[in-house]
Image (cartoon, rainbow, N blue to C red):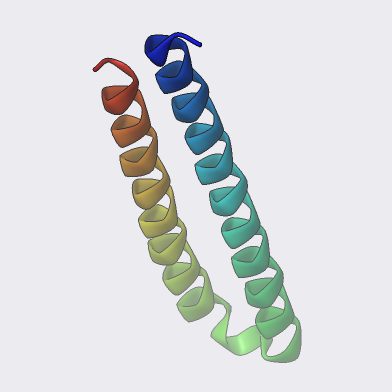
Length: 75
């Protein structure tokens, strides 16, 4: 099999796994935040702020993983 084809296959699998992990992380984050807001509505602003910061960090890590996968597929 062609090594270039295997690189593209690996990059595709890596990108898919990175996006699945990010989706699961953001889903768990949002579910926990909604549970916290339901339990203590008076702290909704604090919980939302922390949730948005954490979601941004998760998205940043996923984007970094995608960039690494695509850079490796180019070699």
